[in-house]
Every structure is written in structure tokens, then in C-alpha cells.
Image: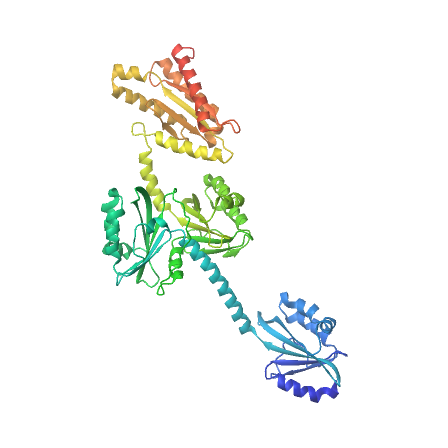
Length: 578
């Protein structure tokens, strides 16, 4: 090897212009010599020279090379493999990571094998490429994020029927219409006076009952005032187009430049199909990504899911679901969803949500550009919080978007109003409308084959007509109230509904369902006590439980309970029960 030193020193000096260090290895004897511009630098911790480069390489690589890259030196960098794979005059680069100060740092080996009169040899050059590798990785990551975001933008925007991008200083606007319905309104796609154009269309198309409210909401001063202390504003109204009523939701927000307002109009009629694809924006001064960013902020979480691999990326814009432990990226989305449902969803809503996240059924029923949604309750600080989940395909029809929105405030406000509308004013029990809603919910679960356990108790007040005729309707009302009170006292943990003048029905689930026979006996015993004492109320009762595989409808269960009630009413009148 010594006879080649002069020649190789010249080669090394030339190579050290580009490399931090250079090794010369005799391909026959394995002896080696090390050269460096920095005498303290030891890329692989090898000595300045030695008798067996490949043996020492394995020894020292095990100490200083990043764990995941050690295989390069244990297999790829062995002499026999290099000799078999490298042809004379070819060059090969190998990238690996060294552990420096506890951190992996990228380096590159350049390998050259040459044949000279002195014998075969390898020349190995080492260079620190950490910065360039990390920059390349960052560019790849940014490119992937951009591809995901573009799909996100398309998927989010297709949820809306029309978007307006309004310059609040000049009133200039650009309209993006994604449905034929809005194009029939003949709104210019671009103009210089948004609020004047809006006034014309409000007068022409808004439902008369909503006109007074909507007129104000389309004025510039009102829009600015609504957004003054709020990030976003939402309200609902109705349009009449072609003689048909269409319910709409308008969603307003500032663009990120705080100079433009983005106004989103969504058709919330279930009957209207979403068939047209999103038209790409043609305005050079508006970037579609800016609109998409602001749309995404409307939701608390967005999941971008590959339906083939089930890998996903998670976008978060608030801490509503901060206790969910799903990572920002992951695999097995549907398995993660099942796990989080059992841990984080309110117990009464878990069965419904598990059915929604059945992948095969979801994909079968979700044809582009259909949107499916479900409302349920998450547990936050051990309290239920109402959220809405929307599922939709992205433009490539391979990825799904799952968008989660906090609707707790509006649901509770609506629930409060609905409670008044679903309460019987005379007895304080729930009314017939409320029972029909519960019946519809039970029927929906029967239709999808959910495992249900419930029973119905039907109650009918005896002798109400006689009391009204002899003592007056006020006395009759008092008797009805007493009947409702009696039923509620027995079934303190179940909803009681007054579904007719003198008829009540109780829906038994949970613990009351398990104790149904005992509670039913208590109810009849209290009625018999009243009958013996000749006091009101006297109530005829019947009960029946849901039989899976037998009952196709809730009304089947009701009918059996009703028949039993009438049979018991007959026995009460005949005096055959005491």
C-alpha cells in the first residue's frame, strides 16, 4: 500500500475540496489510510490507518451510527457485496445518519473503485449532508401537505351551494355558484356593489315570512356589526325559487386579510341533491386556499381519511375534543374511531355512532357528492356536549372528510324551545308530539337491526265523561292531572306521555325495563286501592315488551299493550278485579 501513498495523497488532496474526509482501502489486503481536512474529525471513529477496514468498520459503526442505519454497514458496506455490485469506474452514494451529541446527523459516502498498476483499491469520501437532506424532506412534507390541503379545500367547498368573496372597503364581490338553483337567480358572478345586488334578490326570492329579518341581515352595517365581536355569524332563512321553498343557512366570516368577508350559503333541504362539481375560481386576485382555510376554521376537527389504506390526517381548530388521543396522523382510522366512541361518546349515543362508522355501509351509502351527517354527544369534563359530524367524499373519490362541529349551544337552545312544544300543559307530562318523536327513534333502530330492550305501558282513565258531565270540565281536568301524577310517581325514571284526552303511554328502558313487572304491579295495586276507596283516578292499564324478530313496528308493541288495557278496563267495569 505504501508504494501508492504518493499517488493517493494527490487524489485525497483533490477530493478533500468536496469531502470532509477520505478513506483509501486496498481491495486485496483490506488495509486502509484516512485523510481529513480536520485532524479531529472522525466520521466513523476509525483510526488514521489499519490492517482491516471492513472489520473495524463493523466494530465502530455499531457505536456511532444511528440504529436504523446500522444495517448499511453490516451488509451493504461489506467487501464482497461491494465487489459484486460495483463495476469498474462506477460511483455509488450511500446516505446514513451518525449520532452526534445525541442527535442523528445525515452524512453521505461516495464510493469509487479503480484499477491501477499498483492494484485494486476503493476510495471512500465522507461529507455532512444533514442540511440538504432535511431541506429535501421538508419540501416533500410541504408538497404532501399541499396535496392534502387541496383535496380538503375541494371537499369543504363542495359542502356549500354558493360562496361570496366581498371587499368590505369597495363592496366589490366575486360569486362562486356550485348549484343550478343559484344560477337561476341570475346573480352576476362578479360586481362592484354587492349590497345593492343583494337587496334586489332579497326582495325577489326570500320567503315573505322571513323578509323583515333577512332584509336587515343583508345590509352592510348590520353585517359589520355582527362580525365586530364574533369570529363568525350564522343564520337560517328560506328562499322561494321556481315556486318551491328552499331552506338555507348563511355563514359569514372574515378572510385572513380582515379586508374581505367570505359569505357561504348552504342548501339545507334534504330533498335537494348535490350533483354538480365545484367550479374552480377564475379570479386572479382571490386564492381558493384562503377561502378553504377559513371554511376549515368553522369546524373543531377535520379528519382526512384514505378509504383504501385507512390512514388519516387530523386537523384541529379548537380544543373541543382535546381529550381525544388520536394522533395528528395515523393508520386504521375506523378502528381508532371505534376506540374513541367507547371512551369518549355519551353512552346513549354509542350504538348509533358505531352503526354510522361501519365502513362498508358508510361507503355504500355515501356516493359523491352526497353528504351524510349525524348528531351525538361527546363527554367533556364528564358532561355531554352536542356535536355534529359530517362525512363527505373529496374530489378524488378516494378520500373522505369527517368534519366535527360543536353545536351544543344551538341544540340546547332549540331543546329548551322544543321541550315547551313537547310538554302537555295540563299534566306537565310529555305530549303526543314528543311520543311520536320517540316512536320514530325506536322505529329507526328497529329498521337497522339494532338490539333493543323496551316496553310500553298504555293507561286509560276510567269514567272521565261521567265526571265531566256531572261535575264539570274543571273536575275532569283535575282527574286527568291526578292520573298523570299517579303514573309519573310509579314510573319516576321513564318518560310519560299524554297522547289523548284521557290516555297516557310510558316508554320503559334501562332499569325500569328490568323492573317492569314489579312496577306494573305497583301501578295496578294503587289503582285498586283507589277503586276500593271509591276515589279517583281509576286507570285501566296494559303492558307489552318489544319482541325482536317478531315485532316489525313499534305500533305492534303498542297494539298488544292497548289490547291488554281494554281487557283490563272491561274487568274493572264488571268488578271482576278487586
